[in-house]
Image (cartoon, rainbow, N blue to C red; front, side, top):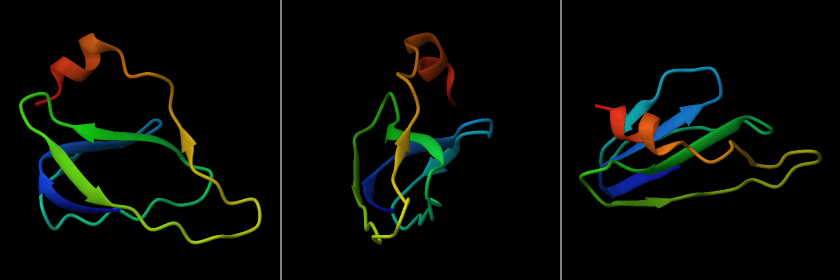
Length: 73
């Protein structure tokens, strides 16, 4: 995933969130639960490239609770 504009967050299950700014590249391994989206005071655009593979799918985390999302700085 390549952040192209705005600012956002990326977080894998069990890890700290990573701040995304234009130019940030995140490599997401297959079958890793994660979420990504805009920061609360920004918008966020990105390019995602998926490489096909056997048993290799994106696995999204459950809905991010508003209280947690709003606490990210």
